[in-house]
View 1 (cartoon, rainbow, N blue to C red):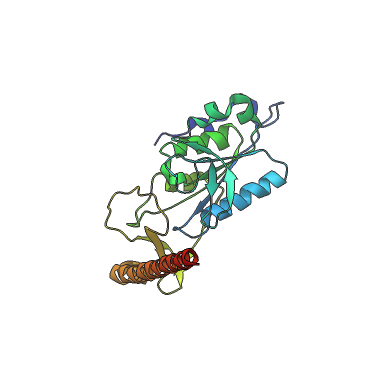
View 2: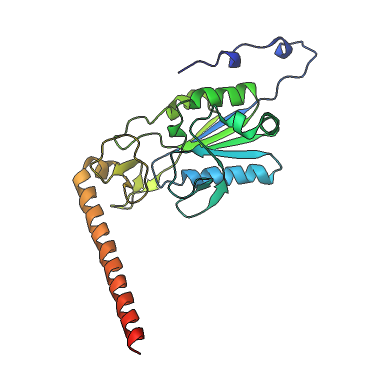
Length: 241
């Protein structure tokens, strides 16, 4: 992880007693939590608020995330906002164009844990370019280990918001993300088909969670099967008329 030296040293135009006005200061705000805790919803709410207040905004997400749409950030509830889907953050300035970048006030980053160059981008955008950066993402993976470089941003941040979900087993506050498959790679993008939010006891007692997931999945499949059978029966009745 590179250090952002330019954010520490004062330029001659910023020194006390200078006749030049100080550089506009940026901000960094971090939203973290397990899956299904409303991180993207919170991010979009803040981005829309900034836009409604007359500020120029842009949204970025990782091009790895193709769950709902390529050119939009979309919540699990279907709320969407247009975005730049990029493999890295370094390319954002080039893609958006220098003039457009200079006019930007606020940059939102969703699923920030997927960007390896997150630290340098946020540091430069806030400290050197005066941008407000609002990012959301997972603070931990399914093993409860730090995910990507998102936690490295906390020392740079003005604010950090930790959200919770609701445990799908008992309904209590959920702080962790449980993976419902046997896959072991860190990056496995998915939704409710692969993950569920759980509290500490039910994370530790993973077998209970697996059994609950199996029952829910079987119930869903039964309902789907019954619906399919009903549709076929209705079609047969119509054809016989």
